Image 1: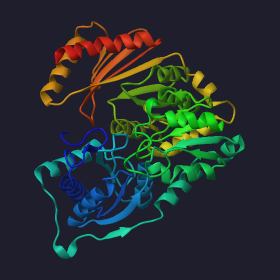
Image 2: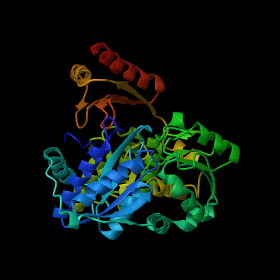
Image 3: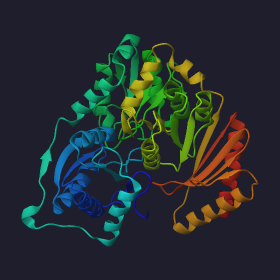
Image 4: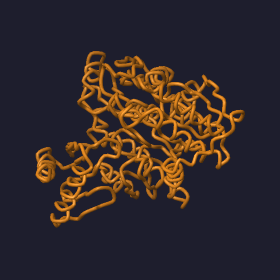
Length: 454
């Protein structure tokens, strides 16, 4: 697809992503939704400073093709998905998730609460590019109706879907960092109602993200790590801008690798004969768990849409898929809901704290080191030169090569993956090995060949 990437459409506001463009995306989506029998569409956003402006544009676009708009206001993406499933209506979420403050975007959600499958996205994109919008007469344009109960209903659904007694009896203190994002409106209340003591940092909704950037990577979690140590918290939890991800800090204030957290959750969930789904940058930690549980691992291109689509296919074939996701904190529990949910994931991790500490959980899945680097480019010519250099280097390496998404070289003790970002002008390099030096060596080798190309 030319417009929609692995997580919808995103860009720098008023450069790549204008109000007029968002309106056209909404018109295209609304036109497809109405053909499918849905003339009512939910609309939510995260806390970004440009969110209200773009929501107004999206609402106008939807109304112009005859859609009634349920205005949900600011709330996490998983809360919008829960509303869509509960009400049986499709939805648009205005968010750029973990991207920097100047970015925003639009994510499309079906009436089942699941991100639109590729086939439907292609229909929307076709209408967008050809400007085939089913606009209606002036007296048939849609209304906008504010809806206030979505956050409360979402919290109640999560409370009812986890082991509240186990979490309450554990008596844990949670240090929570919503990163000024949409999770600030729901996660503190959720964990207090689960019986946790809650302390917070960066918990004021603010679309400028003054405390830290929205992406919950280790370098952005200094404040959370400090809060865990100074309050003797049992666990630190960080969200991205739309709270569909959760990254953890242990009781000592140490960052827990997202891959290790995912492996721990998978170890608690998988049984013999189950299948799990992850992206091509999967950690060996998960591979180890899958082997130990006599389960099966399916790999997809990076991006939640690709993972969700594969899960749907497997479930339709009668496979059991109790957990799936990526090591970036985006975990799915399909038996609960086929969507990434940072608060639900964190609550499930809290269940593990009933019999051991966070550091003990992380230690069970240690032994690997990850290194990730980005190379930026400014033009499509530069991008093509970089990708050409990657392909040449990978195919000349005489190492098993996986091209599911980018170029992944698998060694006996390590692997390296190079792929273009789906949301930013970056070429991403990932490497994993038993020791940090080996991972750095692989990244430096690939990075050197790319920089030489430009």
